[in-house]
Length: 120
Image (cartoon, rainbow, N blue to C red; front, side, top):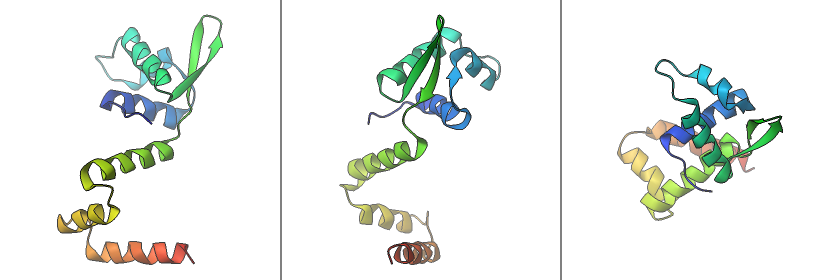
């Protein structure tokens, strides 16, 4: 699965939250100054080319919908981060979180307990 730019991820968020959308509907989600219709349309077509969106045709317009769900995208993104920055070691990633105090030892113990409970 290819990565997304910040703008692409923002737009995918609209599809994940709202469901199928026409590009013109997306303009309502932005404050002034709103992006130009053609700009959004180009980004949406790019997302379709990357395999994140597909469309249904209605006359001469398209309604786009997500074909990759948020959970699958999140899992893929996490795997890429673990691979790129932690040499494919989930242990190193968690260890880094604990060292940087982004996760407390109590939280880590709770996570371990939940995982153990879920595997029984």
